[in-house]
Length: 133
Ligand SMILES: [Zn+2]
Image (cartoon, rainbow, N blue to C red; front, side):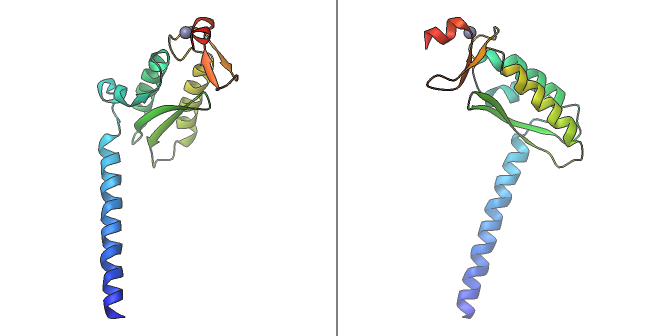
């Protein structure tokens, strides 16, 4: 039993250490200062949404302790990942919702006005880029 307990303790410590490393890596990766050169490689969306994300990253930098991690698309909508443990969640939500709403009317490819289409896949596209797909 003693051996089992030791194995358990060692495994727990290893899992905890791995978890701490992941958290540290996320903290290091987070962009707190509006640095677009660091933020842009994590925009996993079309170029049409990049200007919207640039504004979001700059707005995020106004909130102490808020770190932008990445952006991607899910069900045609913008999704934003960030690190935050402060108490201004309403402000963070407002910035995030503003960006998401803008993306709902902005072509993912070109940034021209677009609409959410729900044929085959859910995507926000302008007329030109919808017919090109
Ligand atoms: Zn377009």
